[in-house]
Image (cartoon, rainbow, N blue to C red):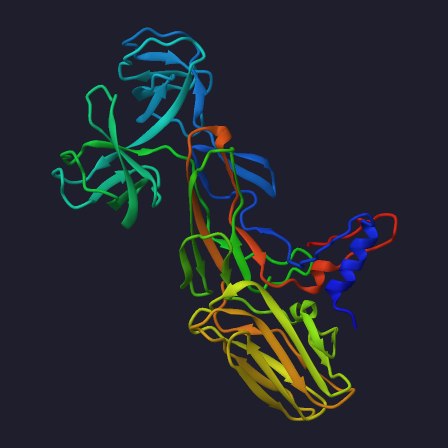
Length: 454
């Protein structure tokens, strides 16, 4: 029996006969966790159409008329949806910084503190920061912890701006390295924050400071995506995201996430590193159909069980490789049902680790527990069995003891220019493909009649 990947490779060679080298690497489809962005987006907008939508910075608007120095009122071309009073804005290339004190939504006229410079019509205006209120007294040089009240949420990694001049022309920026605590009262969030350095200025209760207005997104709690064909769970997966940056521009982007079990216990959380493997999922038996068959042949039952058929020596062996090495989380394990019509021995080895041998009694179902090795990186799963020539064994889906059921996440991009960055929601990439991922129709004339992910 040919490996299914080999068959796919031959099909691709037929479709592209002039291609001299084809390397086929099967993978599952890409799944967006929040393709319509059902959560809350601040200081950004969406580009594209679902599911291919991406966040970009949108804090830019323009001056309608010329201004002379010491202005306090002016008209703008548009009002952004999150533009409210108590925002700092910058006007023009001179970075004239003023505080918006009132907005007339009917006329697009802003009232502000006095500007320092003159400006011409059409100069760009950018939102710099949103006002929040200091909740205690702090001396300069104290430990880097501060309590503030804000009417918008604040994310770890955001910048805190402290004005150090009466005309708003200069300020000090701190990065929030941790959110120690938060509670809400009405529409106000109360935070205790840790900053990257100690405060350089004396602050008192009621002083105004500002959260820098970089684009950020906070999702709702979302269910795990299901396979787009089978509507079943995806199995183990990678967490990832997509981004696009302008050439020679590097944007500091911070993705944070939480994965929960059915009781709302957190299984995984923290800063998301691209291609983070997650094993808190069942492993579909059909995943083994696309492994490397070393001895014997394979098939798949209508009830969803993997079938390994013994070769002429009564042996079967296959290897299901991981895309990358993975260290399984402590405490995770799976259960699966084994069956063979003949007495057989069966083993599973987490590659680089020891293997476990199970004896199968003829015509008796056996539930086995599959425990990985928690203290080492593994590169795949090796399955082997020995029975009688012409016979077989079956194994069902592997059921995990700790399963991820839902997630939430946030995105913060430290960028101001619209053209510098695009970012996606969090993506799921199945660790193992299943048979449905390569189902297609091949009619020799309409080559895109089905779907192949490679």
